[in-house]
Image (cartoon, rainbow, N blue to C red; front, side, top):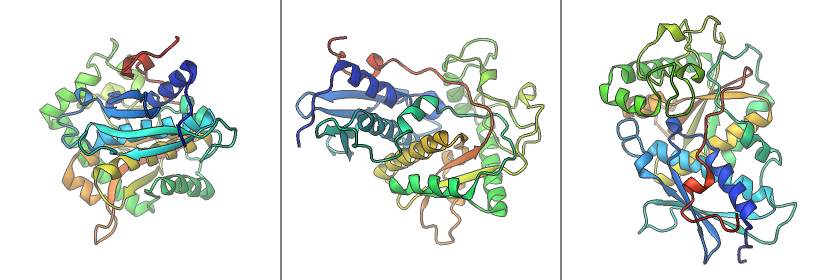
Amino acid sequence: MRSAPLDAETLEACIAAAVAAPSFFNTQPWRFRLDPEDLAFEVRAATDRGLRHLDPVGRALHLSVGASVFNLRVAVAHFGWAAVVRLLPRPQEPGLLATVRPTGSPSRHATEHRGDLYQAIWRRHSSRFPFSDRVVPKQVCAELAEAAHAEGAALTFPEAAEMTRLLRVTSEAERRNRVDADRGRESRRWVHRDPDEPNDTGLPRTALGPQDAREHLPMRDFTAARHPARLSAQDFEATPLVALLRTEHDRRTDWLRAGEALEHVLLVATALGLRASLLHQPMEWPDLRRLLSPDPEHTGHAQMLIRLGYGPEGPATPRRAPEKVLDAEIPNR
């Protein structure tokens, strides 16, 4: 069925939802175009916003773009269409990562997921602050796992001993990042070194969240250096809840699906009143990433560690305006 036309207001809202997705170091490595023939959104990689040292193969870039694709799907459904998604649709165009085509006539029943996820897009913010020790109910964990499963990924909640091991691996990755000069320079390109001045996220560095004084949780220091002044006077949660997101394979399509799964999980978590932050450091070191798989035969590939819990809302990092990422003017504005 041919796509229905999108008016300017709906088009802008869909792009705004897409760019509200999380991205590593808030790089926002995406561009969009509305194909006038097929009336489909084309989602492309903005390679100039990639991370050469932290993400040399572009895996994190694909996860970021996958998250924006999921937000675009949610927005299209919110406005009453069904979304037909194709990942890597044209092999001859490797920079074209996905197309999202609204189909059918606008309807109130086009949603393919929870109906409150569109509202959650605007409330979802990473929180790197201490969480409470309030236990996340098992049924909530089950709903988050189902959200990942719907996108072709698996979300598991390791037991205490395994979680401790995963956090040790993450701590080692954070230590390596701090002593790697190239990674440090790249990190500071996106997050300013001076805590009293705005950085590339538009926020003071101190607003990005404190560090765990006891270093029980390896929270990322985006300046790639340990800053005692940022250590939290409040203890972080004694028993953190950390979930592992995995895919069966490790191809570009799997990275995109992992990004869709990640954002689906984060939006459901937001809708259920949970906060989340990402522990991506071990994914940036191939040997450490391999250690994250709990299976002796190494079936499945780790894509993300997600810290979940109840606590304060994180800061809203600024996003580029829709017209800055759309490769065509929004008509009739």
